[in-house]
Each structure stands twice: as C-alpha cells, then as structure tokens.
Image (cartoon, rainbow, N blue to C red; front, side):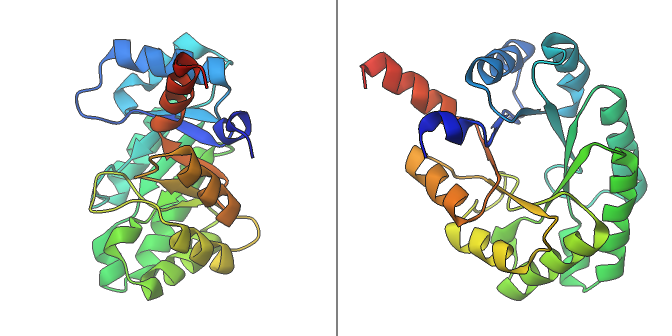
Length: 221
C-alpha cells in the first residue's frame, strides 16, 4: 500500500489545547491537498473550518473529549451543536467508569442517543483501549455493534497509550459486519500506519502522515 492510499485512510488531526485557527487552517489545506478522509479538530473550530473547506473535505470533531465522563445530555447537546455547525463525523468518548462498573445498558443507550443526534452523519466510538482489559474491549465491540455506531475507535491520544495492531485485530474479530475500525494515538511512522490498515483499520487518527510525506519530498526520497 503506497503513501497516497494510506493518506485516504487518515483523519488529519489537531486536537491540542493550544491549537489556533492558523494551525487549523493549515490542517485543512494539507488535508485537501493530500486527499485525506477528513480533518479532526476541536468543536470550537468546526463552524469556521466547515465554512473554509466547504464541500472539499469532511470535518470531524470530538465529543465528551478526552475523558468521556460528561452526562449523556451534555454529549447529546455537543453532538447536535457540532452537526449544526457543519460536522460530518463525530468521535465520542465512552464513559469508562460506567464500563468498569459494568453499566453496559447505560453505555449502549448513550451511543444510541448520540447516533440518533448524528442522523446520517458518521459516529465513531472511542473506548480508550489502554485503560481496558481485553474482556472489556470485546464487550465494547458488542455494545458498539448493538448500538448501531459506524466505527469503534481505539484511543483519544490523551491517555497512557494509543493504537496497537493487537487491538485492531481484536476488534476485527469481534465487531459486527457493519462496524468499521479507527486506530488513533501513537501512529508514528508510515510503517505503523500500513500495519494498522492491514490488520483491519479503515481510519487512522494522526497528524504525522502528511508531515512524513512532506519531509520525504523535501529530502528527495
């Protein structure tokens, strides 16, 4: 798989607390130039970015980010606001405490509510794999499938670890046929990206792939 194909799987991401509009605009420009799947940016920039890219690029944003322990009503409001501002894709964070407490029904209902708020837009569910046991990861595959979300996603990139090939393979073996997989966090090289896609990941949440391509071009490789 060549670099151009890898880039079509990338959600070109900037979620740092210090992100400025100038940096977000560069993310937009790079995503359009290199034909990524989307840009993934903070909710406060969705309207401005959506107006800027128009129909040239899908805008993705994050909900309940990065800790996931907001109320369902709060996440629902965030989701509806993001969609109204032009978001085409929503990456929500589950309530990890609920998972540890085995409150599976609450998690599934929250995902259903946010999927309803998305309408025909894409919903990805971040489960923060680095904080979970394999048993909990498998349970979340079941919940995400039953709730009708579009993707299960490994990580926020703000916790103790990111995507691994082992977790993508685990997801691939346990999600339903209509659920896709997004790997995020710690994707440091093109080799990492290729291995994650080969293992079953349809999307990659990262800011590094375009930087790698630019650096190689500048170096004459």
